[in-house]
Image 1 (cartoon, rainbow, N blue to C red):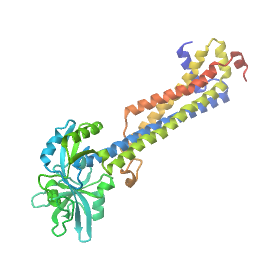
Image 2 (image 1 turned 90 degrees about the vertical axis):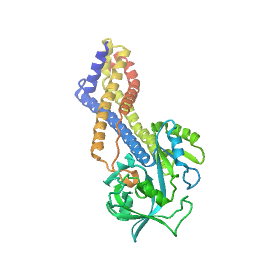
Image 3 (image 1 turned 120 degrees about the horizontal axis):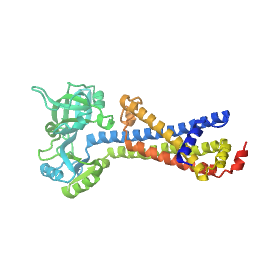
Image 4 (image 1 turned 60 degrees about the vertical axis):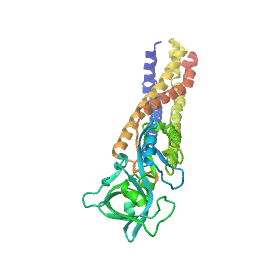
Length: 417
């Protein structure tokens, strides 16, 4: 018999148009249950993959935005990097490196008023990085003063709230450490006044509550670094997937005391990457079990269908249907259940993911997840792999019932009540 016959019979079995009235209702019900189970499993797995991928991308972008791909620092504790121009040339000549931004960094005191003083991490930059500017939600990343105004400074949202300071207001910074950063200089602190040019928010509390940005010149004055030295270089590579290889090449070329470390190796970022990697491994695995259970539910459902259709199977045998034909018939039933369930589940996942991406329907506690809504990152490969794996599982789950149906004796089947 032709394959067309097998699939037509499979469709009739699934639609419940054959057999007794009570049997038709039962077959229709268990078919809906099977399709619904596969659909929910597929939708849950695809949404989990989209959320985990979204978390990974969002956290990685935020961390890289404030820590770059690679940081080149001195291995000597709290020591700056000397001969910065020569070192910078060596860095940018390394294959895979796109740019090396000099950073002036140090711990300073920030004062809004006599009652509002806090220690902050000052980061001085030559040029406002695009990734930092994207996080500015009030004011702008404008560090150069207009005529008659003070230099600009950009504060994190948590720090601004704690200090009760807003855009346009003035703050004072005190540099208390000596040039090497190894001791305090309390008798003659370096003092500069700034105008708050903008406020940024990354949802990373370790950054929003501690880090302030200003131009490299004022930062150098406050930290006491000479013009030939920098605190570190923030290095950007052309391919983040190859960041470990570039870091190795840098360490071979720059020499002691400078050392290159990838963003994954630097605290507190390394713990965040470990957290993301843990989610990427566990969540899809747990949700994937749902798909496996849903697929193998087809075993029980097909066995019940065979029990209900025993007489019809006997009639097909007597009309010349071979064992292989009956086996393919019930394999087709299982694959149709899997195919319809997969299509419904994938469509449902796509709709829900798009709604979440556009409207942020699922909020998250910012202090725990470093973002206000569940992030979504859709990838066509996820849909393709989930669909293929689900259909393979449904086919495997259908094999045992298909063999049972193929081995039913025609005479006994026709007599079956």
